[in-house]
Length: 539
Image (cartoon, rainbow, N blue to C red; front, top):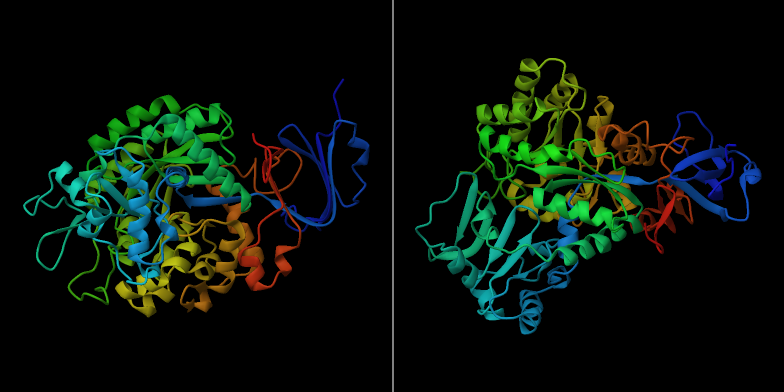
């Protein structure tokens, strides 16, 4: 006999299913990891309740699907969970003192790493520390200071360990920083990162799993139930597999295996060989989405059509030649994987669309959504229309703009910064657009992202208000559209029977919150697969 009882029943003021045309419901029942039923009557599902049913009677609450963060770096968050928390510093002396404190309890010669989610303009000195300054914190440990995914600063010990000198060739697509005296200042950008980072030993497996446990719970606490982690090395993925096996993940993970630093299709083929064993995994908590490429730099090196405001001789850099990238992308899609490519500046967006168009022409019949543009930061009207015509989805990250607007104005000027992440323009064209944070460059958080997209607020005020979108549109970018990007629209994104029971409960309706309240609003409960993953309990 089929068991028609519920494991979980929620009665609420409103259950927003996000099914077009459906009025808010008042009750939702879950059995196993799936939604069993919804009802417009708060007591319409009471017949499913038994003594073993967990019941949440919350007449003032609002229920929404759990959110996706479609472009973030949970691996970095996991690593940072136990790194030196320099994001708390407000001055360079405070920054250095945090490193000094860690050095005092770290055996000599061992690496010291910092968290990555900080911006130099938030420091009183409004700049990054130098290798010489890091040496004052410790000259007995190699130090790796990361800022986001594109920038490192290392101390003299690390430079010597890597054998870097003023005569070291600068790798294509990278930068080795120098001070006014021509000496190395410890700064490494983009394709130069590996010159030092390859020496940093992998953290202990147990520590990494614990870091993912902490970080994924932090994401879930903001309402995020699925992350698309956009730069996962093969080694990182083996840690993910171990974490999933131990029940340490509090969000679902869709991993993009990183091809960053690779420069040829032959190298990419080697990466794809490694990925073969992960092709047929069916774990709903963890899977490989595809491969991640980078075409241009980040804040300081995004490839633009016009020169930088701070340096009229510089317009960013592309880290792939177009022909080579076409071959590399083709290697991926011919193996049946998807591709997400970082393209931030408008020159990078144009170049990527050229590459993708060639791949589509040479590989007819590719499934929709195979080729994705990550960021599309400065995509103008013509480029947006072209992406839509080619069927290229795009992921945008308003929290990145919020946190870095002042930094970016230094490089690109206010007019270009105001045009970043034009959500309104993408939606009005019918684009396949979804949203995320790009943590550690932007802060993750379900409603923080919604607030940003509806207000266009940044750390230096409103930028590009004409690109703001409505609450309902922002909600869709993190739910319906995000599930579609992941090829899971039949599993997630709406609260309907048969879908996975990924849902959030809020003690007030976010749609009617004052702006400042919405920014920091967090759910009281986040369920993933019917399991309470925050604030208490675990998978």
